[in-house]
Length: 243
Ligand code: ADP
Ligand code: MG
Image (tube, rainbow, N blue to C red):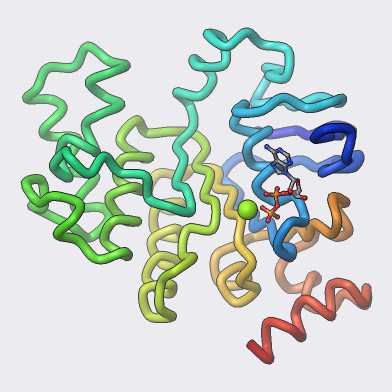
């Protein structure tokens, strides 16, 4: 589904990602972990086509996206759903209108069809019938779920999550983790989850990739990852245990 080949990204001549190679399979959930500033978000933004690599290739299915025009990228992006660190909802719109936003922008579906999809997706994220609430009336965890409902409104093939549970308490974090897993199962999507939480990563992922100072230093199944002897990996896991 996604192939990353020799990707380098510099900001003002400073390398943020150094020669990254990885493949993400159809239907797989990959967690990308690493410390703050290691390059996780940069890698995610490259895959979404929000920024362009300094060099290397990025394949989404059979399309190499790093050279596409903005309008071609827009089309590719319709196959993707995104859930960001901050839920990025429109505060002046109801929950229902937030979820419907992309559908109204990018499809010719009737209002009746849109309402049906919105109701379905809100149900899927555990917020049935909440269409008429305003984001301001919701808890942080509920906002994240609305943001997920919006991301899946299009039935994307790939969902990207950037620190989906940052700022949430452990119980809500566990709920969001559960939702990532159930969404993957119900929609059979490919999921890429950036997190600095090793516990979450182990719960949700098929494989874990670790970025360290812009380099991909490990990518393996959860089970194998936990056994890795690399001291940078172990330090990260140890730090999570003490946390
Ligand atoms: P992470 O998500 O792992 O915390 P980021 O991918 O956000 O890390 O950042 C990786 C490095 O790239 C950091 O040193 C950061 O300062 C730098 N960086 C990220 N985005 C930009 C940008 N738009 N302009 C300049 N530097 C950036
Ligand atoms: Mg980040």
